[in-house]
Length: 476
Image (cartoon, rainbow, N blue to C red; front, side, top):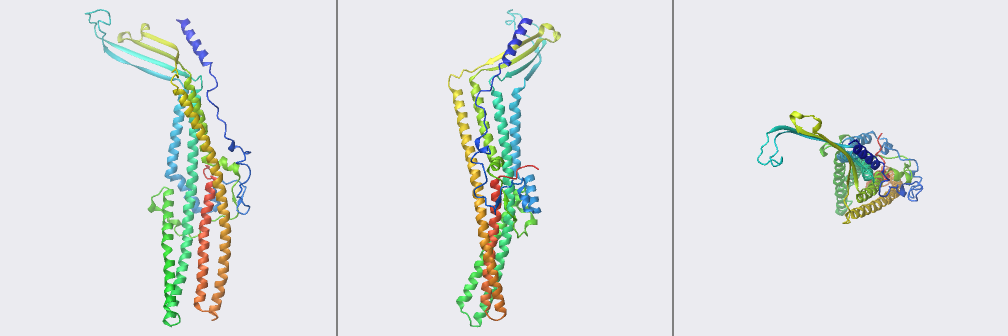
């Protein structure tokens, strides 16, 4: 018996020592993630010195605005946003799956047993017609088994699980990026719409003055009915511009409430009086392409997808080979009055080999599926990289052109202010009529409204640029 035990142990040791390199391809990091790759080397094409700098993007870019209300809203969104809570729960599930797969590396123990009362049949005892007496009996067994990962199937499965966890972590970071950008965008829209409403109400007030003056001149017989009607029509047209702006502002408040995890009716009242959108002074730090590809969570998520798909090729390939487990089992069965007797014990020790011969081609088909999934993951990664570069270049170009547009509108507004000031002085000196002075004031109000709309677009373009850059997910 000792010789048989030593033989089984020796065979088990030999099998354990036969571990080889895991089957299937080893994962290699994608080329675009290398700093020297043409897709990520150097500064962005659309990064102009006046609008963007190659300085690294700060971890918490919204703090560049130096707006305490915005900082508080983003932190509240990080703490209560429902999409972020869902992403964190998905990450926890992937971590649990990872731990489950890692459990295959550890031995498994099984125990069982229980008492019974009865007897065997006389036929079983080869005594026909004999009825043995009933007695109390017991049975107990315990086993310890360990699967030898000779061909690396468990190791490849663990690699796939680790990549899945990394993908889930990137998904959480991606949600954080979108939550921060969405909160900043909603806050900026509330403030910029408030500014546009103020400009629109100024235009309505000025047109109301023009209508009042036209009515007086009509009563005095100095203008006709057409002029007075035209003035009233312009007034109603300006009033019609107010409701859409009010609805847009309220929609932004509701969206801000939802992003911060609150019901729409509980929108943050402290921002309702905001009439100045957040603005940045100077060039925006954007870094370069290499930093962008390392930072964006969707690229990291796609890269982890390649790693997981590559590892699954090894998992599928290992099905072509036998599985070997080492096991030891012990049992004790007998009558209760002989519990623990030496003659009630039994045991076994040795390897267990199982192998499903892949004669149907199913294993090869699973390998082909895994390889195709890997090619799809690579294509998805390449598309994500190209999309990230395109989004950033587009956002930089749109931001630079809007700055040019705002500069032109600012110049027009300044010239309109000069005309309005001169018209007021001429009117006070009696050298021009009141309608001419009002026309100059209305032109100035129109210029200011256009400038306010450009400020709103500029704030939105800034947030779009930060969203494309993919920052804001880093933990303090």
